[in-house]
Image (cartoon, rainbow, N blue to C red; front, side, top):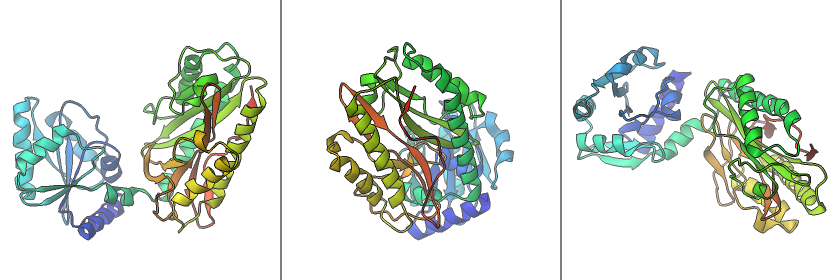
Length: 367
């Protein structure tokens, strides 16, 4: 599996004219090597040359990790004294002959720390944003990746079901988020979640990215829960909305509209159509119902090793959907001062169309 990934990356680098790819610790480095590093005050960077084996610059104290790599690596090490760091980067530059090379990097990942050390070691190199080839490499998931994502979804759903009995008027958003976090761990999530759960009730649910507060639930509230789990590095990202007792008619209406939009997005999503068509489909349902101005975000985003990764589902995106792509479909309506509704599923594109990894009820359940 790792050999195939590396070969595909080599092909993409040669196709797009990159001589070297520089990767910080994170999902792409893990995807290629199986190695995990925490970003710390010490620099770590993987240098992948077109046509040969990569070099990993890392602290000497982590030297033993090289033996755990799923592909052959050579290491260049440095001591704890920061004055030794530049020497290590210079050594790697000489090994790979970085001078005058085209060096690609992930703009959302490569830190200034490693970037400036690299620039100093190869002052005549051209540094270029290579996010597009990383996206191409990782967007289509293989069977093992999908198995891990399915397991993450199952963990997330079971954790929420175990949390629901404690949700009632008088419970705070923070209390619910804390219980859900504990249930995620009990049900088998990796300890590093894709994000901390969003639990927002009443007027707070009109904020798509609310942070749990001390506000307690009240009868008549909408409650939005956006949560995720991780299994062997792969993630789930789901949202469901609940009613705390009887809610007013407009809140009931927007819940029905969002459900129709969610269903329409999944119906439209097929291989070989522009991914922006999924956003247009969900947005039309909401706009036709009179709530277009209150759908304030894109319809979804890719996910896999990250909670947010390409492809991004916005109307102007003409990227063609391909079999094996995984992303969220999560339309929403947010009425300031009243409340909001979001329904989010994790889907994969198959030969038949769009398959939802998540199957938890999408109806507005009264708690």
